[in-house]
Amino acid sequence: MDPIRVPPEMFRFTDGSKSGLHVAILHAFGEANERLETALGIDDVRARLRSVGWLETLDDDELVKTLDQLRSFDLLDVVQSHAGDYRTASEYERRNLQYSLTRQGEAAFAGVVHAMEVLASTGALQTAALDALGDRLGELVRQLDEGTDRRVFSTLAEIESHVEAFRDNTKRFNGELQRLLRADGEGADLATFHEVKASTVAYLQEFLTDLEHHTHTIATRIKEIEVHGVAQLHRRALNGAALPRLTGTDPAPRWLELRKARWDGLRTWFLPEDGTEPRVEELHQVARRAILTLLQVLDRITESRRRASSAVADFRELARWFTVVPAQEDLHRLWSTMFGLSSARHAHLAHADPEVVSTTASWLDAPAVEVSQLLRSAGRTERFTRTGRVRDVAAIRAARVRQAIAERAELEAAWNMLDTGGVVRLSAFEKLDHTVFERLLDLLGQALGSRPGEDGTRRSTTSDGQIEIVLRQAKNGAVARLTTTSGVFRGPDYEIEISTAGGGA
Image 1 (tube, one colour):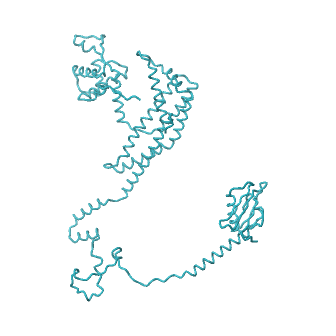
Image 2 (image 1 turned 90 degrees about the vertical axis):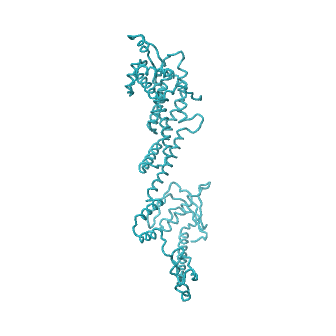
Image 3 (image 1 turned 45 degrees about the vertical axis):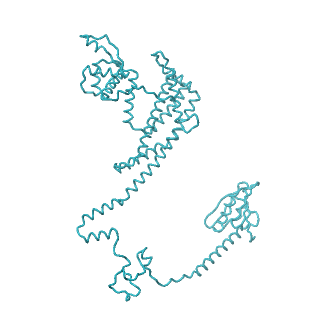
């Protein structure tokens, strides 16, 4: 891609003390072009200036000098008109001139207008643009099959406009989003700042909801169009465009080149040819990262709201209190309350033999008193009492042993009752106690969870290896009916064989 080269004089009119007048004159010519007036005289220019908001008075000499300066920038062109009536030679020399915008002038004014629109616009992630893009691509597929060249051209133009709008809005929104992520909210209303972040998270989540569906639809439509051939598409659109040939050069090659570049841009966003990640997926990742970042910021804001004040604010408030407390005793009481620096907690401790130490002796001369470590850490001294009685747990231990023996006996009894002594059908059990039925269901579940052998037989053993079950499929779709104390069980009438290690009855 060739670098963009801007003519050096193209935007020179926006600099200097006369920049406001220059822009106003180009604006006046732009308004005239919209009314299909391509050439303006001096009086027409002055009238158009008032219509675009330039209210300062300009004499003919100053206006002509400004127009000539714009001519020197190659923004205006001038021709002579001999159709008017002129009273003097000087009036003829000046008022027969007709000014019009050059192509560079049109481009310069369009650039200024576009720049101001970008400054005033707000980006957006428009799901409606993706909907419209998918619909227009589907319509283009139908037009390629049975439509005219003019319909192909108009549909392709709509597709390009939707792609351009989606791309420009996405770029602007991403720029605003990144600026929002860098903002820390200092100096702003915290409630408003929190509301903006929260609404942005909701907006991003709503956009991401159906993004993958829209992306898949657009990529599918692109593939369907490329089956017909992109070159064929552009040739039919060129025929439908009916381009005029106003100059010596043929506009078709440049038009086709622009169409190809815009089609490549569409593929870059949704279906890259080189197999790289589509740009819309990058947009998906950017949005997800932004949601996580914004949620973290919202958490910090919420946490800061929960804190009534900071340490700095607390000390400032305390300093204000010290300035308004009137009495000296109140100041000491405030100091003791806030910092807890009251009398020493070990001052009440006495020597082991108080009679040895005089009551008038200084603390510096008196022998040291041992201070407990617990007094330093918890603010209280140790209290030595009798050691607590050790609890006798022999009865509890014996009860638990008896309970374990009973449970083991119950389990062994259940296994012995389920020992089939050979191959039987599940329906042979007929009626079971609910506890024994639960053991049977455990065995059936273990067998059904094992891998079947070559003949379809399933084998499983309990974790202690005491019980083995062999399970075969029911024949002829028979159904077993077992009655328990809690209800009736129905299921396939498997052939089962349950054996215990001890071979109980």
